[in-house]
Image 1 (cartoon, rainbow, N blue to C red):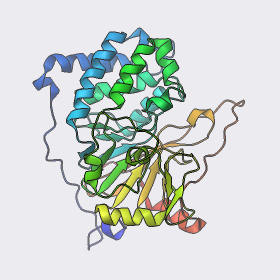
Image 2 (cartoon, one colour):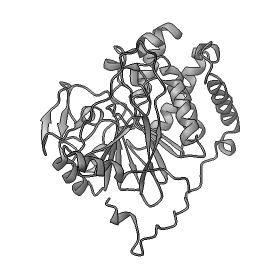
Image 3 (tube, rainbow, N blue to C red):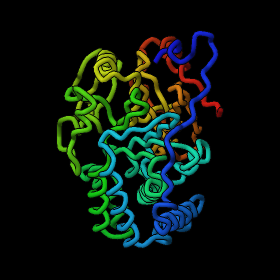
Length: 364
């Protein structure tokens, strides 16, 4: 997806194509469900900038379980490689930062006006994971063809039992609700494909990813174990330390270099890979070779980093741009640091050119 690929011969941009697919109108198919979801979304949005209350004040555990059951069926109706058409915006890790998620919506737009694909890690680390997933689940039920929710590595019981979500469920509603969420997470799609040319996942590539059908054919419900394609889609990371495959410093899955990315794009007949999973200082980072972008979508991650948040925007011609939300000031007592570079070019001038290749988003 070079700069030359993104313009026509005269040098002028093509007029963005209008979406031809008719939007699903739940209000016509199931007006009572649509009314319920509208009310749920309104109640959840009422928690924005209101830290005096939480989801326990606006939703019962029984209602949450009913919503989980509904969205499970929608996930299972979708392919494990869910497909969407551009224009679309791609969102990285949220990590239970509900207030920041809403600030991001204020910047990039909300469903259904905008079409969004989320790359996972909705829970853990932050204080409002249930609020995050319930808002996104309600939006998915209400506008299923305008929002796509992929699974992250924190949407697995072995991880979210340790990093905060288990305790959050226990405190707010009881441990039983945590089990209901795991059943739902096991049904979430593992990857997304945009306009047949942009592959999205939470983690990264896998030696077992031979064709896109390899992802489509993963049976669900499923729970990733300790190795294999499912683990790699959720856990693997790009690196600029070499061209091939390497043991991951995480102790799980792999790290992969530019050569692996280029070969995958060729064999899978795609132009670009967008993934999340790692905090990056500007909210986005272009890997050397311009075939892979890492996106991270909440600022000041865990109050340990001074990172910005970003989303990747793809227009109808698959031209890439970004929207960025700068981090608010942290308290003086916070010992935050800049997030490290992960897979950009080791040559600083090349890395700067790769970064500037992705332009700021301009609304058409």
